[in-house]
Structure formats: structure tokens, C-alpha cells
Length: 182
Image 1 (cartoon, rainbow, N blue to C red):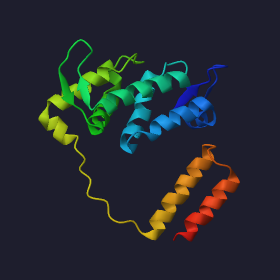
Image 2 (cartoon, rainbow, N blue to C red):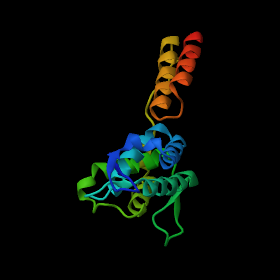
Image 3 (cartoon, rainbow, N blue to C red):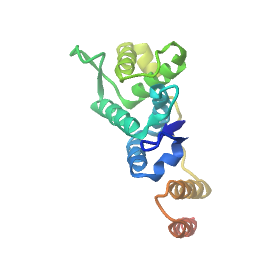
């Protein structure tokens, strides 16, 4: 996904956006999300991106903050004009976003607000069959092997290094510590 620089208007890859303060703020917001919801939100942000330019980082931050507030509320209202609400755990928001992305060609893009998503999630929450279908169906996680734990730790270290959260010396120190724990 391409983002737009707030200073020059130039487009750049989403990942490069984590190098500045706004990018780090956006990354911190994503860290609060369930991983599956976070992946869905990345795709959802594309629905807000103007056709001829990238999504501004400040707008992406605002959108994710608003969405995070909706998810954390634990309930959903069809729209602000009604008081009827339904329970809406994060998995329903994920299902709603995935449903919107699947119907992307039917939407009027770019989106302006989360109103359509709220209506979709409300519809899922109101229909017991859809709500049940959105329930997690994965088997319980088995204990990881020491090799898997090491690979996970190294992957997190490499991601922190790419995002500029740590320098190469800190990364090497963490790699050694992770290898010593195996």
C-alpha cells in the first residue's frame, strides 16, 4: 500500500512510514489490535485511499484510532441515530472488514467514514448464523518447539530492526540472548 508524505506529497511504501514519529504512532496503534484484525485493518485502510494519491499518515492514524475506539467499546450500533446496540467482539469487526473487502467493487470509494462498516458489523451481530460463522474455528495451539520459539524471537528482532526501533548492535545482542535461551 502506498502512503503520501504530508510535506511533499510524494508516495512511499507503507512500511517506510514507520521511520517517522507518525509512522511509529500508527505502528503503536496496530500493536493494540488482534493480529487477524490488524491484517484486516491494513486492507481496510486501502478503501479510504484516494485514487490519484496515497493515504496521508495523519488520516490513517485518525481512522485507526476511531476504529480502535469502536472495537474496544465491545458493542456496535447500526448508526449514530439509533440507540440499539449489539455485542461486537473483535472477531465480528474482522469479519465485517473482510466482507467489505470482498465486496470492494460494489463500494463507492474512497470511503469517508466507518459508517458502512458499522452497519455491516451490526448486521453480522444481529444474525446468529453469521455471528457463529465469524467465531474462531482454529484448533488449540500446541506447545511450540525450542526451534519455533527461536525463529519467532529472531523474527521479532528483525522486524524491530527494520522499523528502526533498535539498532544493529541491539539486534545482535538480542539475537545472542535468544539463542542462549534455546
